[in-house]
Amino acid sequence: MNGVSERPKKKAKVDAKEASLHDAFGNFMEQSSSAFLKIADSEKLDLQLIDMFSAHAIIVSAEENVDTFYGIPENYRQAWVKAVLAGQIKLKTT
Image 1 (cartoon, rainbow, N blue to C red):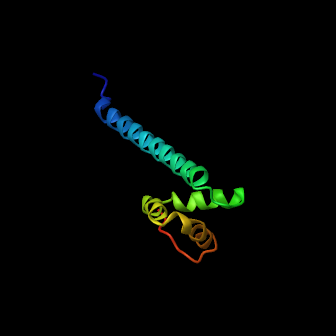
Image 2 (cartoon, rainbow, N blue to C red; image 1 turned 120 degrees about the vertical axis):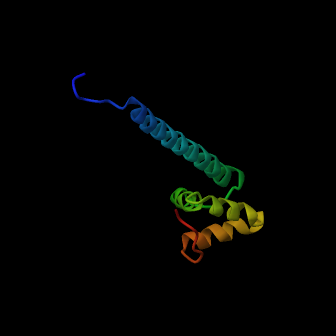
Image 3 (cartoon, rainbow, N blue to C red; image 1 turned 90 degrees about the vertical axis):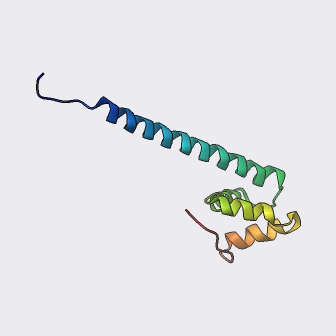
């Protein structure tokens, strides 16, 4: 033995943690994309493209915000999103 001890099990744990983080981030991005498509396409909000991007970033920043968006009656969502963009409604951020 050369006096250097290796800990392959610890490295495996780090790799598993990194893989878990990677998977979690991938899942978040997939859910975020899905929410964006629902907000942009199915709800047909009348917004400039840059406002749609801003609204998306704000709304999907926390799952609670997405739930709030879908909890609002469809005919009020346009006004709600505009109020969020104007800073009149503060949403949770992570």
